[in-house]
Structure formats: structure tokens, C-alpha cells
Image (cartoon, rainbow, N blue to C red; front, top):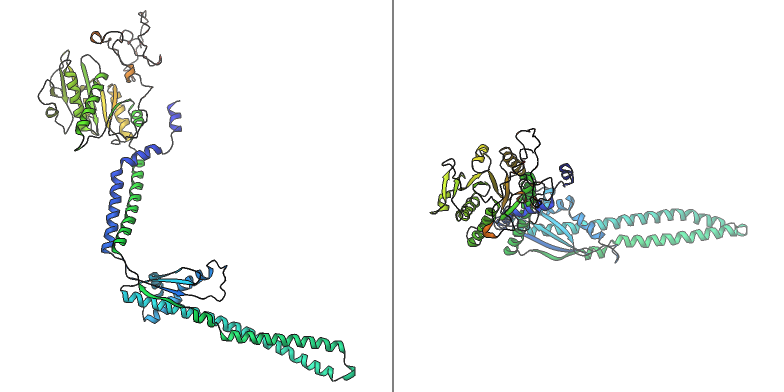
Length: 530
């Protein structure tokens, strides 16, 4: 798969990287959550809620039925929260407050199909009680008046129908009298129709009279039953409960804000946090990792891990005399201590010196009194069998031309999430321009749950498997190092037309460790031919 295809297949947002980035920024969202918790507690203590009065009203509906789903009560709540009811209550209170503003201080809630609960806020307890009483009286008066007006309108409609029927009955009576006056000449069929119509109209008039009388009485059941069943009272307020509620709300809001801010900053800043990303952007494999150095506890365990990594790095560098550099990117103290540990391991085999070019550190104090020499950059030439470890930095502002004087090859010590992707690319390009091969990367403070592969398979010129190793068949005390192989240059200085020479005989196991012929190491004999 080509690099372009890999780029196309990568998702827009890597969820694994996003989760790891948010988890690494736990200080941010924990701090915002604690700030929200404290802010909620302060609001509960310094800005207490105003006194609240509550009352319950029993509402009798003329058209109530067991199958009602609460529609009538929702209508009553909507009427309660109108400017008309609020205005009537303000008149009872002799208040000049606007009804629209007054609506913000109370609310209604239907507990059942016939019980309405009213909650009112006030500046003082007496004001809250007076407001609750005034709103309850205004609502009851409006409700009863509305039902009585409906009953009066119904009575008037019935009386109008009765009068219409009476007016229609008068000519019927006159026709009957006229037809009976004819005596024997009267039409029996006509009389029968007139008698039937008179009886029908008489029945309607009687029915309309009865219904009009009932409607005139009004709705006494509604008027008598609609009343305040629970007088206005002040709700008890618990400071502890209010404090816990406000603090919990503040904690939840602060936590959500912190998580959102951490997610946004992790996407915007684009700082690699996974082993896979660091190795890809630097163009070198991750060969070791170290946790974040503790401040107080478990220092001995951290020292043991660091010394173990130092032994690994000593095995990774070349066995004969030469120079290697440790370049720091965000883990200055770890880099300095790691260099001292490596120098201590190499001091057992021969002379070793440290070149101190790392700002804000004191390698002499860390090295102490012993066989390890601490030199400044360019102090003394290197002896034949001397091993030299240069310690420098690749932070922004680095003098790139000075890195080649610290070591012929380098090991990068990178703290996870310290530098962005662009800077990692800059480091890789500058080291390639200086022709300083990267042996590997030591990741500091990685995510404990990061199990991504930090090994590159397409860079054998810098990978450990492309470097010379001792003969496996020789005994440990008699092993002789192989001749130094020159790594394949990524950017050859100039292309030369090489003459063809007879290829010397090579053993079959010279490139046994190479996975493919394309990335096999080049021996010094035919390096010029390449």
C-alpha cells in the first residue's frame, strides 16, 4: 500500500487517539469539574433561592369523565399562567408590577385530573403567601365566572328556542280553532295533522322550559366544589440539600465543559500520543518506553526501569568506539539521567565521556565523581577507543548544524503529546539533512493502554535489524564484532557512475537477518558501487 493510499484510508478523526488525548488531559477536565462543584456550592450559599409558597386547588369540571387523560387540567394550568389571571391577582395585591414579569414568579402543575398545585416565589415569606392566596382567589373566581357565563349563555339559547317554538304554536292553535268551527264540514285528516303538530310543539316548549330553569340555576356543584383544599404554606428549605443539588449540577456542567474543551484542543493542536503515530512521523521505530518520573513515591522503581532501558540502548548502539547522541524533546530530566546510566554501563568496558549540550541540566552533578568525564561541546578530541555520548535538545530553537558534533547517530527521547505533528516532521527532515541516522525512539510518559505497534518495516537503514550484530555461533567471551556496515543513505550526496568490478564472494548468511533483498545492508566493499 502506498503512502497516498494510506492517507486516503485514514479516518478524519481517530477515535482511539481522541480518547487517549482526552484521558491524558484529565487534569483539565478534573479541574473544570472541581471548579463547577465549588461554584455550585458558592451559589447555594451566597445566592440562596427566594422563599417559595405552595397551594393546592380542587377544580371540579362539569364535563369530567373517567376517560379524561388530563386535557381539562392542562387547560386549567394554561389559563392559570395567562396575563389575565396574573393581572387580577396583581389588582388584589395592589401591585404595579407588570403581569408579564409576574408570570415568571409562579407556575402551576396538575397533580391529578382535579387537583392543581400552585408554586409562587416572593422576596419574603409573607409576600410569597400573599401572592399564592391572591393567585388562587383570582383563578377560582375566573373559573367559576367562566362556568356561570357558559351556563347563562346556554339558558339564553334554550329560552330563544322555547320562544321560537311558542311562536310556531300560536298559528297552529288558530288553525285548529278555525277547522273545528266548520263542524261537519271539517277535514279530519287536517285536524289530525294539526293536533299532532300541537302536541310536538307543546312537548318541546315544556322541555326547553325545564332545561332553561336548570341552566338558570348555573353550576352550583362547580361553584361549591372548586376551592382551595391546601392553604398556601412556605416550603421548607434544606441548606444541605440545596448545597448538594447546586454542587452536583455545577460538577456535571464543569465536567462536560472540560471534556468538550479537552476533545477540541486535542483535535486542534494535533499532538501525537500513540506509539504508532510517533514512529510514523519521526521515521524511526520505538525501541523503549519509560513512564512519567514520579515526584515523591516509587522513585526506586523508576530508577530501575530507567537503568534497564539504558542497558537496552547500550546494546543497540555499536560496540566499538564511536559517538552517539541522545536528543531530548520534552523530557529533559529523563534524557540527562538516561545518558548518565548509559555512560555508567559503557564505563565498564572502556573510557567514556559525556558531552553536555542540554540546557537547564547539570550532567556533572548527575554523573558525580567517577570514571565518566563530562565535557562541553568541542572541548577535546575523541580518543581511539573512547565512547562518547552527546546529550542535546531538539526543542524549537535548536541549532541543527551543531547536532552532528554530538554524535554520528542518535537516539531520540520524546515525551508523548509534547510536540505537534509538524514539529516531528521538522525534526525528521533536519536529521536526514544532517545525515544523522536515528537508531530508535524512547517514548516517555506513554499511555498505559496504548498497545499500538511503534515499529517501522520500511526503514531498514535505521532499524535495528539492519545493523551489524555479533556472530551467534561464537561463544559469548570470544565474540568478535563484524565489520562496520555503512547504512544505506536516504539522500545520496551525489550519484557516481561506478565501474563494474568482480563481486567478491559473500557468505550465504551475511544477509540472513534481512527480510527482503531491497533493504539488505550494504557492505563497505561495494558501497561505492551503489
